[in-house]
Length: 64
Image 1: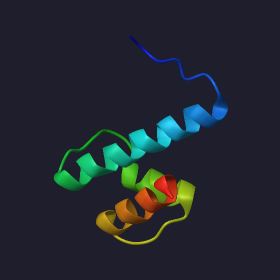
Image 2 (image 1 turned 90 degrees about the vertical axis):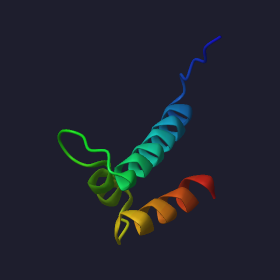
Image 3 (image 1 turned 180 degrees about the vertical axis):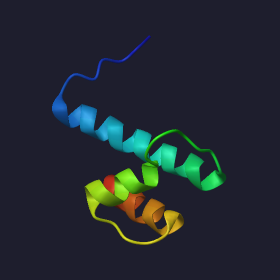
Image 4 (image 1 turned 30 degrees about the horizontal axis):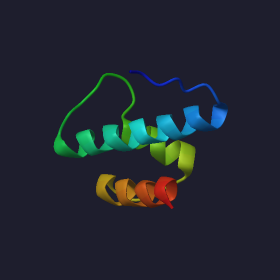
């Protein structure tokens, strides 16, 4: 059984969760083509610090 995410708020929350999990994978060493998730999160949410600090700040931001 699947889910339908069709409201702007639900789409934003889902995107934030995907960004958080993707940053966790980057911290563990996974890479991707193009911009890093780390740089996307830093730019969009104006966070500062290294990957682990940004991960913790972003986690608090979306869960709190």
